[in-house]
Image (cartoon, rainbow, N blue to C red; front, side, top):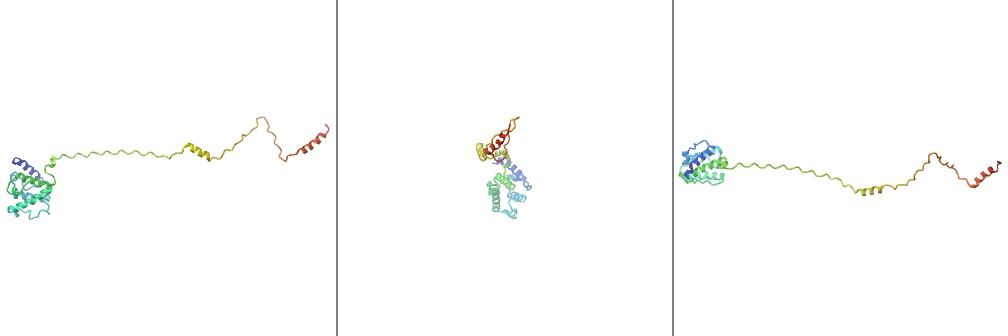
Amino acid sequence: MAEDLPALIAETQRLLGDVIKKPKLTEGLLKKPPFRFLHDIVSEVHRATNFPSSEHITETELDSANYKDKDAKVGYLNMIMGHIGTACGRPVPAKPLKIVAGLEPENTNIMLQMLAEAAVGTPVKAAAAAPAPAPAPKQEEEAPRPAAPEQRPERPDRGTERRDSTSDRPPDVERKPETRPLEGTEPPPKRAEGRRRSQPDVAAEAAPAAAKPA
């Protein structure tokens, strides 16, 4: 895995270089990172991003002078790797004893890359490899629904309506045709109003007229 070390060092310099400006991430130091160099990186990342947060790391732990023996250094690295693994959602492949002994620098560089990932929240190598999300398809506008047809009141049957209307009419009075006199003819004389005379009265009036001489 030693042939991959130059590529890993370049990736470590790129990721951590966007987070901190010191200490200098030289190739010589990253080929075999000493404990003091790693402690300075973690402390500077904490000051720049608050990772690990102040709840998880104390001012005493930020002072490299407090780590003199091997056990103290291994305990510190175990604590830092635990926070990194929790933030990234996967375990750190490096081993504290190997780091303190200066062995397996490839895994130590992977740990530093995961430190940068946990500090800025961007997964290592995921931003460049993941394709851009496809734009969401546009939702077609729903066509307006046709208006419901207007309901007209039902008309009664015409035959029934006619029967009902004729039943309400009064019976027709038969009218006699008027008789008019023909032109050039005189209307018949009207009878004189009064009581009707009897035949004896008529005969009495006619008798004197017959007795007169001619």
